[in-house]
Image 1 (cartoon, rainbow, N blue to C red):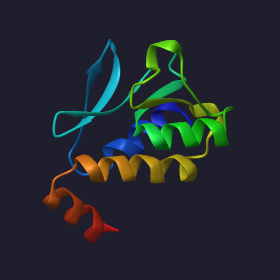
Image 2: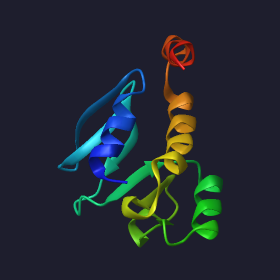
Image 3: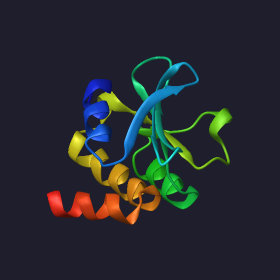
Image 4: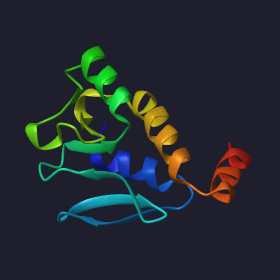
Amino acid sequence: MTADEFRAMALALPGVEEGSSYGTPGYRVRKKFLARMKEDGETLVLRLDLDEKAFLMEADPEVFFETDHYKGWSGVLVRLERIEPQALRPLVVRRWRLMASKAQIRAFDDAG
């Protein structure tokens, strides 16, 4: 998966807005952080709950990892080149659903 493919995936969700986050492309829903690209342009920071983060890092450490900076924070680092879009999309959609408005969720469900 590429950064451009992730961008298209994120922006296809109702209410996702692209902006800058620490000088890199960032994605928010209702002004809440969803994800951002790291400075290398190949690593995604995706907000997840801590339990899901721990599970993913244990299940597939070649794709999901953290650095000291992200320890204890509800975000996981994702090596985009090592994940297929169909594997990442459910994680993104699940997190988006927690942040989106009811109207945005309805629009997404009606379109799908």
